[in-house]
Image (cartoon, rainbow, N blue to C red):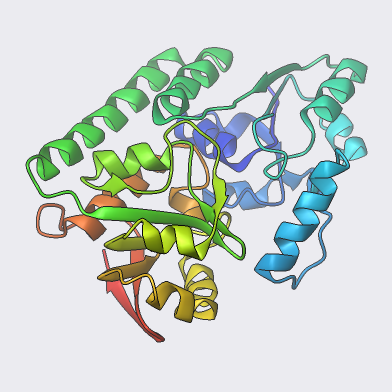
Length: 304
């Protein structure tokens, strides 16, 4: 089977299922696992480089209102790869090329590829996508095993934090303007032993004001800008150091949103473990990645 993945979390999932050797094309943002970087890229970003967070938000809003995606599909390259299966999504116009464009192109290809759209809004739906791709690629047993491993890790976190006091948590997916993280993130916070004071499980991320964040009285603020790694999240947080400092939280951390929270793939469970480590370090002493703890403008890397 020849597979093209048009969303990074699908690429991660395909490799986790052992189907990486069948993936022939990916997006320009597919950077995990490292083998994905060697594959042909069939998309590009249409936004210019070097934009600020506010400029990115404005550009995305403008293109979305016009019905335009922020990614452009290389139709010739995709056609030449003659895929049997294309994996995409329709949930977020910011995250991938237009689903309608993909479906239209698939109908024109001689290979007549099957198109699957993965559009999870919750952790349970993300795990359900494992089964969907496992069946589509003939890897049912690998899918069952992957889900079982994820469920075991989730249960271990749940048991580790059981009975602990739940700190009030604000998860910020963007800072200019401020977005409160939605979809699966509130579930991850709850499973990690916290109380999400802004987001709603299964609902889209929402813009909020700094006043609303402050009124929610968070004890822990997790800065997880969509698509950014921890150092870039740290930079974005430092640019809003005054606003973050005025929230009165006892702890503010910047994390790798791209790896652990933005993408509903296998590493969401890593994100859960990281959150549990941030909220309850004694109960969960080990976690992937790192949290960059901010105290005013002084940033200290805290190994997981």
